Length: 248
Image (cartoon, rainbow, N blue to C red; front, side):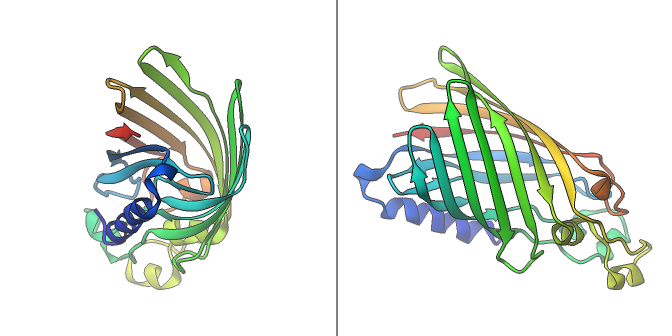
């Protein structure tokens, strides 16, 4: 677990404990994710993460995001929250000599504003986010559609979406600065804003009244702005995860 994830996870769990027991609703657990970073000659990563989906009348805790409901009805929700995005890259994880001379890319904290509408037809989510950690100073937005299909104790939830990231976000994570170009064999690279579609599939099995097992996989297609980066060697970012959660 990375240095930033540890204190954030602890803070999120403390926030849950601080809520009155009667206000709790949802599930909590732990997952393990295998991620192909896509960076040149870099090792893939295995990360633990909190599988949290907890809410009260006014607050929610979902994964790495803690926030409040500005509007909450049976069919629509408007949220404002703060989250941690664990996307990062350590040059020492690469076997490439030039990559090892690059600057480290750290995870970022984001302020988020989101909207969700749901019905029997499924659910649409939309969000806009801004980096408040000072890492990339970037912006991003996301729109997705998902629907859960039930098969007795089993459930499958496909999700399709698209994410836009601005030039500052892409420059931080995928660009090559002038100083980096001077000490490596890479040319200076400054990407523009970009759009990346993705597909995610979540499967869950409720084997007990409270306990369930879940597995998920996601594939994100990199835009040309990312694929053209000299420090990237994959056209996609793929992750596979699984875990266990307890519903209360």
